Image: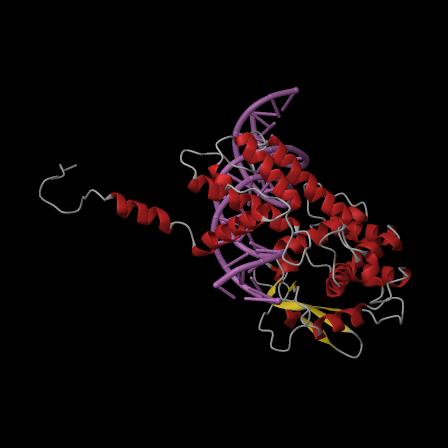
Length: 335
DNA sequence: TTTGTAACCAGGTGAGCGGT
DNA sequence: ACCGCTCACCTGGTTACAAA
């Protein structure tokens, strides 16, 4: 190794404090900054509200006990502009954002509000609030969410995609025909090595008012926005009043969640393994049918935190499983 | 723009599995 | 029985984005 000449080149320099501050600041994306500011604003407007009446700012407090106490109150007492409770995701977001803010604004304050060891009461309040909301069904399912769940269940039963295939499903893989939907698998996992032929599964015909997979899927597809450019089959759920599904693929978490629900509801052991894998698939599908209708209906229409009544108005539910049993064995042969 | 929420990401955790 | 490894899932936190 040659010695480096430290004297005669300009490759080294001592950055100024401003330069360092600038690069450190640039690490944080604009959206994060905005999100932080937003929650600080909400916090302050809660504090200034006549029913609360904290006239000083949270960051002016020196004791963590007091910060924790007031944060607990905030968490449980804050409401959206419309007066509703915030969703679970938002509350988590709120605590994280305010923690970020305190770290930036109180000198040498290096704590994390989400840390259950430093702030046990705050943690308990957050956790308790989230659980309470879950119990009360806050964040309940919408009609089109129920439809999506049903469609998902049909496709699980009739199309038997493997675990990972669910969120890669494309809208092109479904062809609507007179006989029913044809579900095409362009390439299967076990086709590795060059076997590229397309695999087609014809979904069984609907039994009116009893088993209507085709009608469900047809309705689901028709509810996609006409200008939708997303290729994925499953779309994100919209909260807007006029729109049902977003022009964006449904998150993997969502899909995995629905998948797990089916397994839980039907008592299928998925510990450590995806039920759609390998030889477990046939038995898993069989167990779904054996589990009986009520649970399946419950899952298909509602899911973990939704109110079934809402969806019931929308749609008559699958009532019979005998027909589908035959179809399930048909699928078994194909696979 | 602001508001509310979901997606994304990294790091942690623990069950399961093969090898010893 | 135990070790080390892998891998799916979970958690905490950050970032993106649709809707208003």
